Length: 141
Image (cartoon, rainbow, N blue to C red):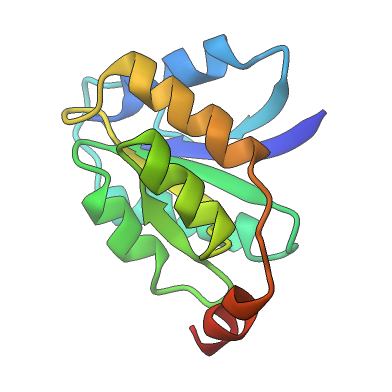
């Protein structure tokens, strides 16, 4: 069973919980917070916490959820060894793995319907990096 780090801010909390419930038989999640949707929190704190875990091993993957997915992505991409992609469709999710070897998917709970988010998570976790011509490009990041 693949271990996935997952975190959200208050806006992403409900979608984070739905993702954990949907995929609990397929993945083992390590939830790094937040633990409720009622108290406003600062999304960079949760992005940084998750990136420290994901960055320790090249096989680690993460899921970050906030209102738009953008803030979490911006905070995450400041870390070495992190390639966070805002995913909102099947196609851009697949390409984030195939061509960019993204190791963190960020989702916007206010912009992405639940079923699309589930499809994106499934594709993200099951798509392998193509390597080849893309490897040298990713190495430049």
